Amino acid sequence: MKKLILSTVIAGALAFGANAQEQEFDKFSLEVGGGFNKPMAPLAPSFLSPTLNLGHVELGARYMFNEKFGVKLDYGFGSMKEAGDEEANTGSFDTKYYRLNLQAVTNLGRIMNFESFTRSVGLLGHFGAGIGNVKPQENLYSDFTDDVYNFIVGITPQLKLGKSIALVGDISTIINGRQTVTWDGSKAIGPNDPGFFGANSVWWTGSIGLQFYLGKNEEHADWYIAADKYATKEELATQINGIKDMLKDSDGDGVPDYLDKEPNTPAGARVNSAGTTLDSDGDGTPDHMDKCPFIPGPASTNGCPVEEVKEEVDFFRKAINDGYVNVYYAFDSSKPLGYSASAASYVSNFLKKNPGVKVEIKGYADELGPEDYNMKLSERRAKAVYDIIVSSGVDASRLSYKGYGEDTSVDKASADARQLARRASFEVK
Figure 1 (cartoon, rainbow, N blue to C red):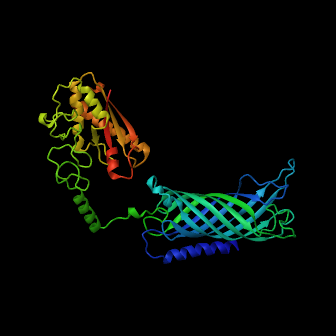
Figure 2: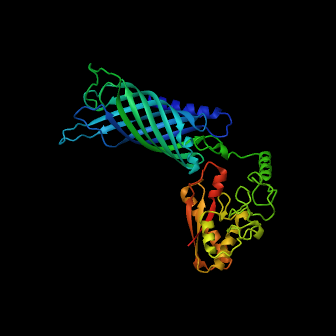
Figure 3: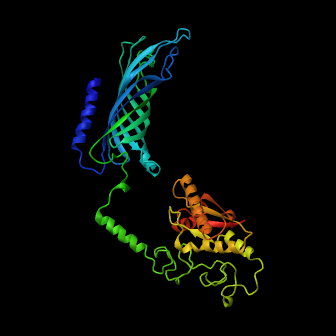
């Protein structure tokens, strides 16, 4: 019986695989594994369940309808044993079993977007129902064969070893229905002998094994990601032309037109990440025309105060500590954007005029990507500004830099807000 079922499973899988139509990914796989089993109930009072009994084997064939859902037919068999202990007054038993199940399969790794952090680890979930057989080899019912139905549920972690193979583990819980005798074979379950009732037998298996993928495609459905599909030359050309159009910068301020909210700024004007002309001190004179961009003053004096500024450092400290002076970066880059690089020059000039002042450079990143990667990226951004100011002639002992990781104060769902988070700021010490 066992050989017939196994042969049917393997032959069916191979036949389906041979007739499968061309797909973007392979859909069939064969699976083999072995490991432990453990009966939980029912057991007679004088019998104990083995902690971990090595004696379970399972074979299966699986078909995936798409990257997330599929079905599998699998066959499991083995033997549950307990040697017994005379001193503890516990008995021994040896019970053989098999099960045949049709199950639904869910690719939990794809549903939970494992591809965002790994392409080699996966997770499958499965549940279904089937038939089985329990046959005690010892004790009162050693000559009795118990035919049952069952329900099964489990999870299967995966580790991709190559295009056609993966290492897997599996933990499954099975509930037998209409089981007549205890796992130890010493006692009938029902009020009659040998009566039965309901779904009353619980056991589980834990195994490790291999999955073999069938087909000629580059990936099986377990690992296929639609975004990885290669584009045609025509599609690439269309996309590239679209990107070129998006990156046009009509006014030459370093902000592409599709992001520029002020697409006609004068040449040389300092702008923010939205392409809007900056007026850092809020005096009505834009920075590119303001001879004192961080000290408010009337337009008649080109933005500088009429009276002599006695404590220039205080105005500068307020300007940078309030976030008016920043160097900005493109996504995943530590190279300052052209329109904001002049902020480093302002800091350099101030330090040269005020030899008793020190400045800390603070790097930040947006919330896209892993946290530890963003921490390192923010430090590289701060270091890039540090190098620029040192190369301008400022003594390195007057500067320090540090990466502060992700700026969580902005709305990470907004592209404009994320751009403001990708920056290096300054703090006067």
